[in-house]
Length: 351
Ligand code: 13P
Ligand code: SF4
Image (cartoon, rainbow, N blue to C red; front, side, top):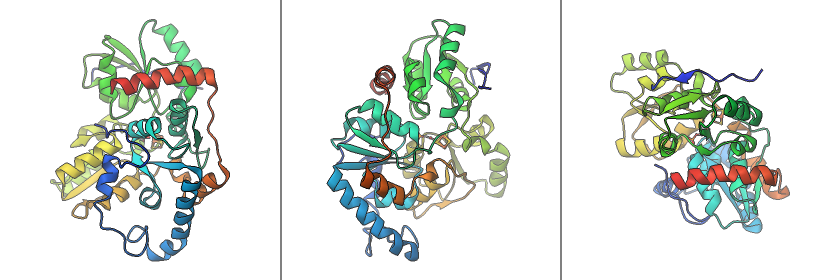
């Protein structure tokens, strides 16, 4: 049975897009790492793995040239992908912007399916590949286009703001999309008293806590972030009162209440670069801390973290196969893509 709309929630900076060759803000900071001496993965993975993976990295570099391709990598990719083969890295909003601006003919999305679909919606003439089409998302699975149509009947005239973690079909039924880095701004940009905010109930309630707009949420959640608890963070604070806690807004409210900072994956990275804490807990997917730790040698990263099984389906080996065979192509039916593009373009204009 599909999740039912939750009750109306009580009123509880992204990098610039660049061409395929220009570095993102995050990539610029990556360049500050000392140049690897023994190969691209030197210091990134243990030597025994490095010897196995570096030939795959070299194949991918060659194939990218041959195919005029770029690899866009989400911040949750493992360090071998993030540092070894990604041309552009970032959070969901940054990936969408990069997909819009790259000159490459082929985009390999090292991320989950909705990210690849968003890239295809924005760039219909490009070949967009996802190395493993099973890389899904519990939020995207929590709602269908028919659900949105029913909500529109129940709440006539109320605009629909949809998190990008959704299918193209759901985006096509929406007025505007948002990501975790711009959700509040997008909700307020509409100038209405109420919005339907789909499908993440926790992101929705986090936005509701910062605005006078009434935010009506759906009952979706991220299977990775909903597992964190405020109690586990309180225990860490008791152990070390100076510890800094930064969390993704897909976490439950008690976790966000316990956090010193809440932001998208790239906003968390930027916060760390500015604040340079001695000890930090990144309450999000595990690879995030692995990647950022490379650039923050003076910060101790304290776990817990949770693994996203969907993101972890993407590997160096299936990125190579994707480029070799030009698989798996992501396609969106033109009539759905056109309506979905309106919602994504509205977000890009408003952010
Ligand atoms: P960001 O937009 O913050 O990168 O989040 C995407 C995501 O899937 C987090 O779970
Ligand atoms: Fe989806 Fe959560 Fe995985 Fe992000 S971490 S892709 S929201 S399941």
